[in-house]
Image 1 (cartoon, rainbow, N blue to C red):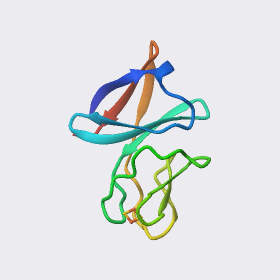
Image 2 (tube, rainbow, N blue to C red):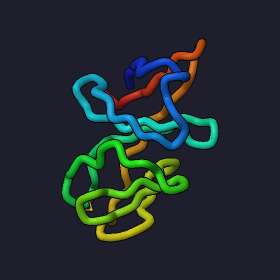
Image 3 (cartoon, rainbow, N blue to C red):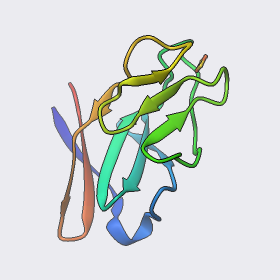
Image 4 (cartoon, rainbow, N blue to C red):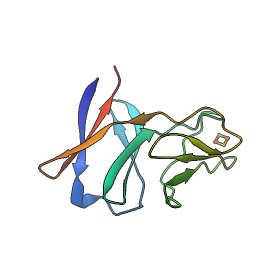
Length: 103
Ligand code: FES
């Protein structure tokens, strides 16, 4: 596991997804209801990037075929995906947002 800085907390607008390159991986990051969430930006249906879509509540929708995922848990909330999204831990330290990626 490696913890990576991804930006200052004030640079994130609530509900506005940013896709960032973190250690060579595309990672979606969003501020939702006062907490930061991060996930691998790769839809589990057909490996498409989901990009910087605005969230609907706590759900992100893949623009390719419309699968939806809960960004808090990775749970699939709408087919055609069946496999959960990979969610990464986040934390904030002195206004810096960090994402922890697996090795
Ligand atoms: S690639 Fe995302 S729903 Fe098909």
